[in-house]
Image 1: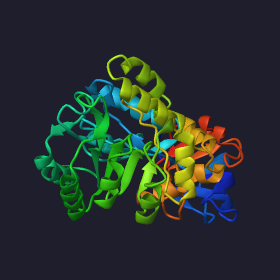
Image 2: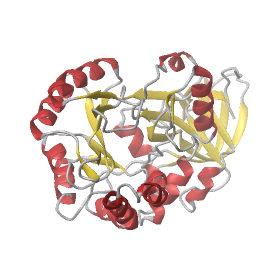
Image 3: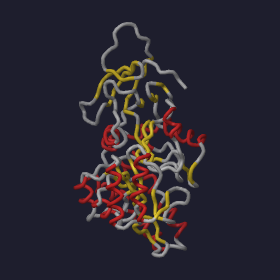
Image 4: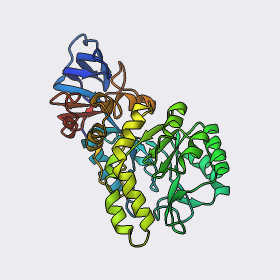
Length: 365
C-alpha cells in the first residue's frame, strides 16, 4: 500500500457541473483537499490533468458472482478492479458476502451497503437473497436496515414460472409495511424492477429508488418525477437482455419477447425519465454475471441514451456523491479523486483511461 502523501494538482479541477465550477490547482495535504496554498516548506508530488471526484458506481455487487457469495480474495480483486477504473465510492446493491473487512483497507473503495437482497421464495437468482413470503417482508427489511449502511434492496419483480413472464413479487400491503419499517430505521429502499407492473405500487408505497427501471412508461414516469424517485438504469446490464431472451425462449416465450421489447426501448426509456426530471445515476450491476470496472462504459451508455455528457458525468460524480451523502472535491474533504489527460466533459470516453487515482490521499494508481 502506498503511503499517504502531499500533492500539488494542477490543470483543471472540476468541482461541479457548472462552467464556473473549475479551479486551476489544488493541494492534498495529509490526505485532505485544500485550495489554499500551503505555507512553509512542504514536499509535494505534482500531478497534472483534468480532475474529477472519485467516480461512483451506484449499483455494484462486491463479494458476489453468478453463483452467490465469493471468498475474500475474489472480493478484493473485484474492489481493486473498480478502484483502478476510478470508482472510489460503491453503493453495493445487495451481496450475500460479508465484506465489512474492506472498511479497514485504506487502499480499497468506500462501500455503502444495502445488505442482502430480499426476494420472494424461488423468485430470484439462487444463493443471492433471503427468500421469504410477504408476511415476513417487513421484519426482514427492518433487520437488513439495521445491518446495512442506510439502504435496503428488494426484488420487486422476477419471472413467475406459472405465468411464464415477469410479474410483481409482493402485494401492495406488504410493500407499504416494509418500506415504512425501513424508513423508521433511517434507511432508504431500492428495488430490482425490470417490468412495468410492480412500479406504481412501489412508488406509491414510498420507495426511494428503482434499479434498472426498464418498465417505465408514460403513465409511471410522471409519478416517479412527482415523488422524486431515482433510477439507476444499469444499461450495460440491459444490453444482455437479448442473450438472456435467446437462452430462455424455448421454455418461456412470453418472457423472452418481453425482455426483447424492454431492451429495444431502453434508450428511449432512460431519456424520457431524464427529460421528466427523474434523478438518474450510474450503476453497472457488476458482480453478478458482469465484470467489474465498467463505470466508464455505463457513463457512455447514458450519453448514447441522449443524456448530455455533463449530466452523465454528474450521475457518477457530483450529483451521485450528493445523493449518497458523500463529499466531492470540497475544502477539507479526504482526497478521493481521479485525474485524466483530457476534458471528460468534451468526451466521456476519457473516463476509461485514468492518468492517476488518489484514494484517501494516497496515490493508488
